[in-house]
Length: 348
Image (cartoon, rainbow, N blue to C red; front, side, top):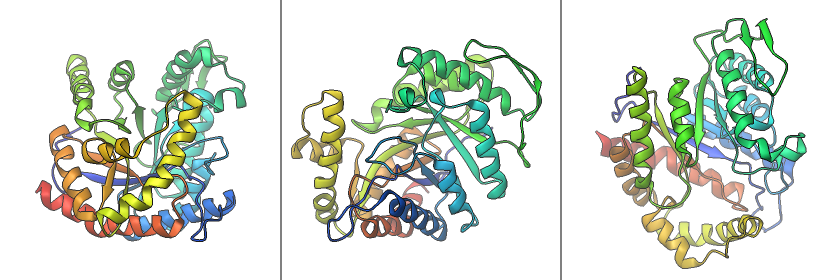
């Protein structure tokens, strides 16, 4: 596959985890309302011509979406062009056959617009919930990815592993109607996962959520090197990073900061991190992987990242903590109407 990056071939997407938002009065939205709002956000993204809309999977109180493909199916029924996928699907704690069936069903409902990003998951609540041992974190992903890759052929599957009974010429339905189900491997920092994506001839999605994006250049180089050693041509490479766009730089920072701090400190307490400071937040905007500011500022930061790393897709994780649905809709509008055209112009 030719993956040369040009202004017209770079794709732009949006990702959300269905963070539990607050309304404009500060009252928390219900999980049901958040899901309805996410559907509206996906519809707006399609109307703006954005290429991809992704929804993450979580099983905890602060995120409303536990079944991304169900919400994506609702969006599919109200959209025409945008590609729809997970961000990510935690394959390690799921059944590869059921994952394939759900996304092949989404592909049928959306007339060929489904994608799936498979990952091990940076949150681990799904493992005890579904009866899996964290001690098997690596093994579960390795074997389940191997089975999922076999399913992508659309042919009867013969497979043997240690995590489930073997399959012998097993047919799995529904099959993909046109071509294949676009399947990415989501990677947060594991070189072994980068090589694994190349071994299965799958696109690579790098989750760059902190620090300089340029520090991921070695992972991109490793991906290309692995393909070269395998005698193939590298598949597309994407980046998923957080951000928030408002009319001005000050407005974006002031609106995002309290929501960012609450979310970051809550997760930090679970993982033994110290509370985040305002200086750390500002430094991440200036030098790291937070794309925050006016459309002009965000476009100016994003353009050299795409150019230097040579990526084929950028996915902005636009939802952060309790930021209201109204603010998120405005962020999406600015991204589609101003940021994307400005970046394309800068890449031309």
